[in-house]
Image (cartoon, rainbow, N blue to C red):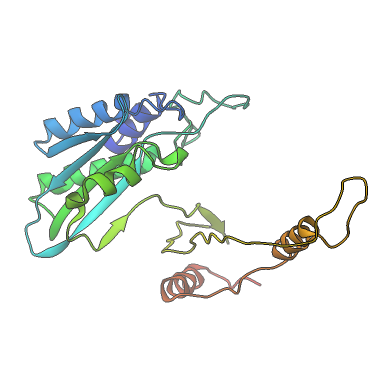
Length: 252
């Protein structure tokens, strides 16, 4: 059997480490990555807000003056409880050319690629600018022990960084007999609002019509039936045009 690429072996190793959040236990994945970085003579440090839940930040010095590039990913995964799996969720099995397991998409394979890229950059004398790798905890539960805490407690780690590559977001597309890997650039953000609704009160024995709860129901119904306008950004347009050019026949 042919030797598997390093990045595939690393992805399998990470999948086999159960970092289900909660409770997380990202330490076991971080320790594995630390061993690889140490062997590659890459500087790194741990930053931990809770015992057993470290964040790792590593840096490879660039050979030029380009701005630093951040590679950031998380090693915690969501639960497998009450789920039926065709293959073992923490087995890292490769079946018919596909890697199976919790985290294969979200996002231990992505972290494996980032680690491999950092090690390759180190071996080649660096990239045009510094490469910064952040391996994060607690993404699946809000980032309170991960990205959110790290940025608040250690903002100096990210000084000068203008661009970041994170979780892929785009799912592989099979169109017209071709395989595409979409690029997603800031395609969606959350919007939180505080709404105050007022209505006449009354006794429970005499139901009121048009009260605050009725207004809330009408508002939620309206939001459910509405969609914000779609804005095609330049990167998305370029991607669609290149996908079109790669197809043998235009799609209808």
